[in-house]
Amino acid sequence: MMTRQNVRLAIIGMGDMGGGHARGFNAIDGCELVAIAEPREERYTAHQIDWRNDRAPAVYTNHRELLKREKVDACIVAVPDLLHREVAEAALDAGCDLLLEKPVSTTLEDADAIIRHAKERNRLLQIGLVYRYSTLYRAMAKYGSEPGHGVRLMWCKELRQCFPQRDWFHAQEQTGGTLVEKDCHHFDIFNWVIGSDPIRVFATGGQHVWKSGSLIDCSYCPDEPRVIDKINTVDHAVVAVEYENGARASLILCMYLRPENVMPEGLEIGGIAESGRQFCAYQDQRLGIGGIGEPFHFLDLDMISDNEGMGHIGCQAQRRDFLDCVRERKEPFANGRIGRDSLLVALAAERSIEEGRPIELSELSPCLR
Ligand SMILES: NC(=O)c1ccc[n+]([C@@H]2O[C@H](COP(=O)([O-])OP(=O)(O)OC[C@H]3O[C@@H](n4cnc5c(N)ncnc54)[C@H](O)[C@@H]3O)[C@@H](O)[C@H]2O)c1
Image 1: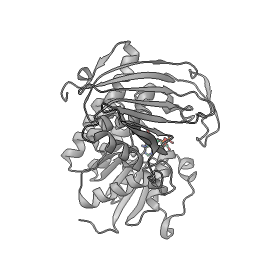
Image 2: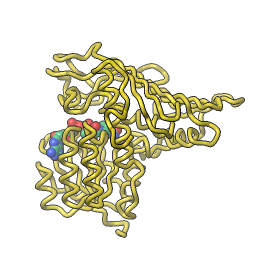
Image 3: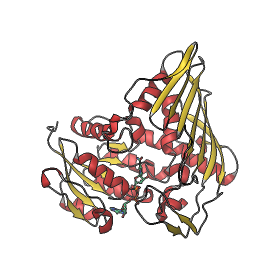
């Protein structure tokens, strides 16, 4: 087992997410960020980070060069989705454990290849499904799984602004689609809280606002607003998911609120159990519960400090847990299989929109279902 001081890390892809990981790991004792690969210098320099002990990581423009020259225990992969397989396999071949950003990949074939690759090389694979590490959604999953309270219905209202003004987010072939890139998180929460296998997906969606040639101006993207020449992804969708145990879940997605969701509930994810128990999370900040004689009330839990002031809820808990897995050779909680399950639902939803019919998940994944 490694000592607490020596997990040597590299980050591949220093865009918005890679920069967040750099800042986050830089703040954690017991690891050292030794190298970064990022082909675009301006993306790397955009992140102004006070490196611990004044030891800035070595910077490479090419991940293969980094993997050849540096001895690292683990890599954090935060490149655009279409590159996940190529970069993940190269890092696994170099003997690294992986924290691979979500979605695992843009296709099931690539996801299976990455999972197989990690297994064959006996390396750990954790997927960046950050909600899995948050106090809030852990509490929701706990309430969901209590005996006698089987969750039968869930919903998610994800009504938000556009993706960043970067080409790859808007190209179906680069991400697998909006429902893959964005909502693999939410399908994972459904899978987790319901605790059964998804079997069928029906979805409808399209483009109301964002079309090729639209001016994209995402408020949290540091880039200037830009016209995106090719947009072939949906900007809204309604998705229904059926589970083996009879539970059902639905997601409504809108990507064109301007400037953002100003409605009081914000992102809303809720559920109803067959016992009559009701629960609902708002804005990733508050979780309420009630029903069966109990008034609806918000849980008195600290739902936000698991990010240690660094961004998304659960993000630092996710990083600390990854380091523990690397040291203790533990299977990550958000492992490859969990990432694949959420990808499966998202890909089925994309196919359902394209073909205008319900999709049996066994059609996409005959070997595992
Ligand atoms: N877990 C989450 O909540 C969350 C949030 C946002 C993004 N993400 C995921 O993180 C990944 C990156 O997203 P982002 O928003 O940072 O995108 P981004 O476009 O800001 O950053 C991607 C970076 O990767 C770099 N890159 C491209 N090819 C590379 C290579 N071969 N080697 C090294 N770097 C390379 C690009 O130059 C760019 O700077 C995506 O998979 C995305 O889905 C996850």
